[in-house]
Figure 1 (cartoon, helix red, strand yellow):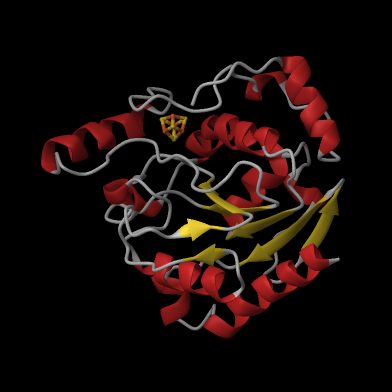
Figure 2 (figure 1 turned 60 degrees about the vertical axis):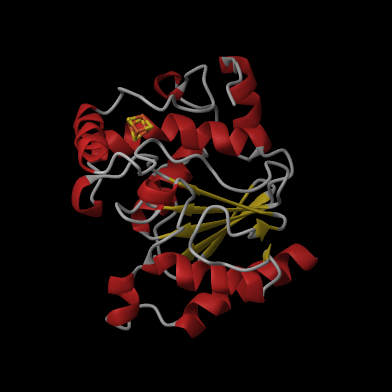
Length: 238
Ligand code: SF4
């Protein structure tokens, strides 16, 4: 979906979210990047390589998943090579998706089977999932310039969610890009697992990313992750 958005529109949206106006550097007219988005040359080269090596994979910027009238947005880091970059749906097909979708089903933010396929019939309920960076980065590590560039599309995702009341930010990169998209400086809202911050009408919730590395090392347990979503559910019930 492509929609024209003006600077005035985005300024109004930032105010709705309790933040100052978006900087002019973040303004673009499109809410969705094209499949061949050229804005990050390194990621475009990596995409081209993956298209040659895995021609049956999705290999394009991964769009947000879920209804745009949802009250909850979950922001991850970036597509995994064999997860969202392969399947075309955020968190679908890699380890992080097992914990995320299982937790969403448990707390009523998703319904149906999660079978790690985009056609598995899973439905998000009052919930949407996106990423701070839409293209798969080498070694799962986007560069600061790539995070800054793709924030245009994160901002657009936020702006079109008229009922937004809660955002779960998975990891520090997601946290920092989201708070900047809301018009804050990162120093105004330091990342901490379990932290909450009210920004206008929206409550921000921090969590460590539900990656295999974080769960294998014990940095994030399934109980810690469940606790974040229990708090989100409690907040939305008010
Ligand atoms: S990461 Fe975002 S801005 Fe960069 S090439 Fe992909 S879609 Fe475009």
